Amino acid sequence: MIDDTKLKALITRLHREIDEGLSPAVQIAIARHGELLVDETIGVPSSSRFVAFSATKAFVAGAIWRLVDEGLVVLDAPVATYLPEFAGNGKEGVTVEMVLTHTGGFPYAPLGPGRWETRASRLEAFGRWRLTSEPGESFTYHPTAGHWVLGEVIAAVTGEDHTDAIQRLVTDPLGLPRVLGIRPDDREGIVESVATGALPTPEEVEALMGFKLDLAALIPPEVGVQALLTLNEPSVQEIGVPGGGGVMRAADLALLYQAMIDDPLGLWSPEILRAGTREIRVDLPDAMGEPSNRTLGLISAGTDGRAAQRGMGKHASPEAFGHRGAGGQLAFADPATGISVAYLTAGLDQHLLRQYRRDTAIASLASDILAT
Image 1 (cartoon, rainbow, N blue to C red):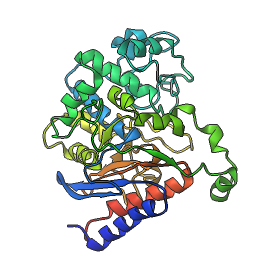
Image 2 (image 1 turned 90 degrees about the horizontal axis):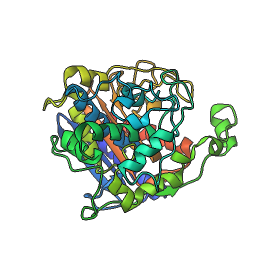
Image 3 (image 1 turned 60 degrees about the vertical axis):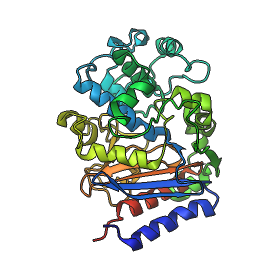
C-alpha cells in the first residue's frame, strides 16, 4: 500500500522541475507485483511518450538475454563471429560480453547521421573503428557505439531489423508498445526533449568536490547536448538508435523492470536473468574511480553504499539494478521491496551537479513510497 504522505512529497518534488523551468514535462511510474501503483504526468497529456536516452539499453539487454538462452548468441564469442565486418584494427578479440559490460575498448567510435541510416553503412563503419584501450582491461562507458554493435548482432542472428526483433522478443510478450523504430504513423504524443541550464563552472565543481574540473572539456561530442537532441528527429527515431533512442512512457519502462524482478512469464532462464540483474560481472573503476558494478547490460546497486551515485536513490538494497539515461532519466528495480521506478523528463539539465542532486532526491522518494 502506498503512503499518501510520501506520494504527495514525491509529486510536489516533481512539480519543482516544471516550476523552476528545468523541464517542460516529466512523467513517473512506480510498479509492484506487475501492477502500476503510480502513473503521473506533469506538463503534458498523460499519454505522452518521452525519449528515454540510455534507459533504452535495458530493452536491448532483455533481447540479448533471450538470444543467449536460445543458443543464438554466445557471451564469450567474439563479436566478429556474428559480424565479420567488425574484425580488424585489433578488434578480433572483442566479445559480446565485453560489449555488454562496456569493456570493449571502443567507447567513442563514431557513428551518426549519414552513416547510421542503413545496415550496410553501419557495418562498414564498424570495420573502420579502432580501439582506444585493450579489450577487457578497463571500463569506459560506451554511450552508443557498443549498442550499435549489439543491435547488429541481434539483426544478424534473427534476420530481422534490431527494432523488430526487440519488439518480438521483449515488448510484445510483455504487452508493451514498440519503443524502438517509431514509424511515421505512430508519432502521436511524443514529447520533444530540450536543453536547460548550463554546465557547472570549474569553481562550482571545486566547491562541491574539492578540486576544479572543466566538465565541458571532458564530455565527448557523442554525449553532448546537441548530439542528444538529434534523438528528437522523426527520421532518427524511425532508425531506432539502440543505445539511447527509445521512445516510451515511464509506465512501459517500469513494467519492463517488473518483469526483470521475477520473470512471471518465463521469458528468460534463471541463469541469464541472474547474470543480467544480480551478478556483477565487471567492477573495474569508472571515470570517477568507483566500481562500475556492471551486470550483463545493466548496473547493480552493490554493497558499497553508492546506490545513489548509480541512479537508484538512498534507500536501494544491494540487490537493486537498473540503467539511467542522459538528462536525468531514471529506471531501476529493487527485488527487496518488489518496486520498480521509471522517471522520464523532457528537460536535459546541463548542470550535472544539480541533476545529480535531483536524481538522488526523486529516486529516493519514489523507492520509499510504500507504507510501513
